[in-house]
Amino acid sequence: MSQRLQGKTAIVTGAASGIGAATARLFAAHGAHVVGLDRNPAPASDDGVQHRVADITDAASVAEVIAWTLQQHGRIDALVNNAGGDVFADPLTLDDADWARCFDLNLKGAWNVTRAVLPAMLAQSAGSVVNIASVHGHKIIRGAFPYPVAKHALIGMTRSLGIQYAAQGIRVNSISPGLILVPRIEAWFASQPDPTAARQAQTDLLPTKRIGTPEEVAHTALFLASDEARFINATDILIDGGRSQVYHD
Image (cartoon, rainbow, N blue to C red; front, side, top):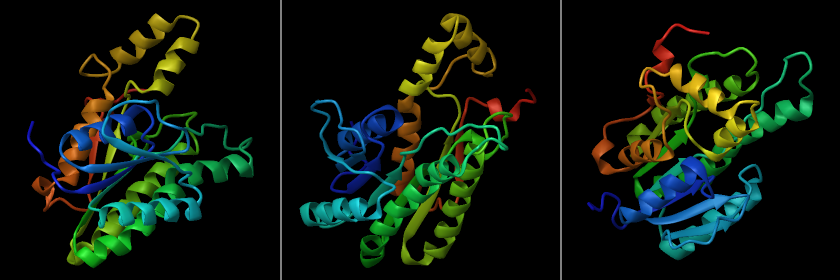
């Protein structure tokens, strides 16, 4: 396997499962020193990732882990802001706590970690930030409020920071996954009256007639974090099998 991140240090949030776990493993396999952040402990494994328990919505907790990473490895070359969470509610019954939770998980947390790594990246005049947004940041589905609001904002933050720091060697891009087989999606299928029918109905909506995998998102994050993408900045890449281009409800 080619070592596309050899000698680099990467932070991956939400690294205990799903897209974050796949990304952390892949980065490590490509030679990176990977520090995986998650509020839940990661399952025991030999994935080559240094797992740390941290809450991205707590700026002090984030700062502590970033300081530890710099002490251990001396630099931070890549950050993948993957951690987030679904918050869906009727707009008029959504309470203030859930509104705040949505933005804490899907926007503020990414900003907390980005803000913590930027000084180190600026000092070395190089760095790549990859934000995991969502197809919800491009297309609106009824019943999904306020999650799309936060993901639109995350894409906006991506573009704004990418332009702000482009001349200082920092690239900021985002990835917008569609339906991906992560644990919460598997759990949702299992909770349906007919799990097989629910899975098939979602599969049939996709032009590819299959659901995406965490590894497919991870490979795109690897490309964006690598020097191969050194002229890609302030952009978003959809990974949804083409579904967002199809007119449907």
